[in-house]
Length: 292
Ligand SMILES: Nc1ncnc2c1ncn2[C@@H]1O[C@H](COP(=O)(O)OP(=O)(O)OP(=O)(O)O)[C@@H](O)[C@H]1O
Image 1: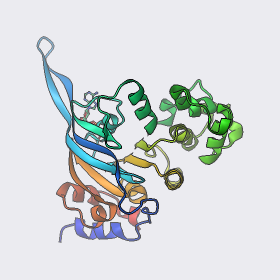
Image 2 (image 1 turned 60 degrees about the horizontal axis):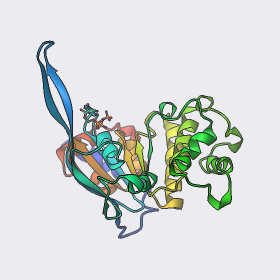
Image 3 (image 1 turned 90 degrees about the vertical axis):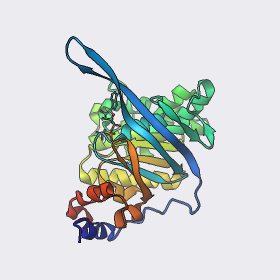
């Protein structure tokens, strides 16, 4: 018997019901097709500089379904963030395409890009470095509206809307004039989440969004993310190296290794019947206590 067999059976025990928000037969909202990203690298000695290309992501294809949480997992350097940055159009792919609602947005510009930027929001790992320290919580939360030149809903003003969103993400709306440094890490991450949802996106990319938080705070933020998804119906691309987190939030899991996708399946498939050796290795590295 391999060491991974009992571990994966353990992993499946008592899987939380994360399928609540996902409708059967959900259609793709985003399609990544053969995405590839190469970076220039420089090698050689002091006198002879050699330029070469390093392929960080190599032909990655997947669908993201409406209302689902797709976890992107894999060891450090496997290409998760680069893939996410391409689908958020923060960087251009070397080749391949991204479709939103069946429309190729890889080369979108002007109004089409603006509308794409509204549809796809990102929550980053470190809330302190991703929130402007000189701005108030209210200004940070409504920044995407200003960028999109959108009014606050229902004829309200931006500040009142920011306070409404603060309440929605579990923050005290009386703290709307505070700056990021006056919030704890978990609270600051809630500001980042409120900012992401302020423009009612279709997709929220969470790039290691809970990785810097203590486990108890992490669980609260994960509950909030699930709750928001159930209410708003958006999809998450959830990048994490932490399979205990994947177990709590994902509907499906895509496993990356050295720039490629080695396996994609439902959370149950991945945890109970992984097909790829690398997935088995990842699962066997998860401390047993996480699944107690
Ligand atoms: N701008 C860049 N220039 C050169 N190489 C890069 C650049 N961005 C990423 N890479 C390289 O691409 C590879 C994939 O990086 P990426 O950040 O996507 O991996 P990851 O799976 O998200 O890892 P981590 O969990 O450590 O963030 C790594 O080898 C990284 O060093």
